[in-house]
Length: 354
Image (tube, rainbow, N blue to C red):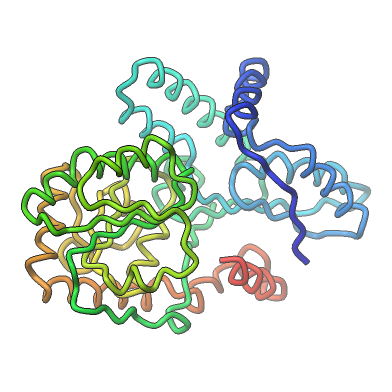
């Protein structure tokens, strides 16, 4: 069964977590995600039965997993700790610091990155199994025995999007409370989009994602032909009109699942190198990579002027998912972590909540 505990976010709660972080020396991101409701729920779960494995999904769940293990350990009983590490958080924050122009925020982010690097290294060493989603993240932590199992999709269940005669629509999809997404969209709005509309005045930029920050909404309102939708239930109408699916990220760790999704839909993608990190990309075959604002704008314009290139990129991207990111092919690797008997149950649970 799946049971949930509420995790509220607000400026006041973040400020409180920041004060705790000063006292404990723990990263702000870890202090922020500690909640009494989670401990109360875990008390109930621990009392309900016996457990052989404790699976922590992402680094913010590390302290909860160890808390549960401490309460379950007994004579001859020690549940196996498994961590599914989606992101190297220290790398995410390091890159945000590099892109930050405010000197105070730059220093604060640098300090947070150092704390995260220490926390992640110490925490991962205490787990019986650590599973990364990219080789790059595994190398960052020097854990050669850790597994690498990428995040996958089920392409057989998701047909290619049938696009209409492509208007000049550029689409970004991603939750905007995630700082790397918000930073990338700001960069797109301020430095890339003006270059695109200067050449294609009828081009449209659609930004889809929950919780857009106020400054991003304000910037979009003053920009030409930009729409910020917030969260949408049905992506299909937007995808069907997408001429370029963009991933303009300057910060990140792990892998950007939005690229796997874009490929699954059969869409042509323009991404930064950071946005495509850890994914089997081939420049000009299944993706267009660009790291500067001028180059990024030029690659989007290339897709506007070359429909055959767009179609080829979309088809090759879809083939990449079918060959390398289909969970039916890849997720049996979890048997090396959980064993042949338990792995099918774990895989099924992951796909239900993917």
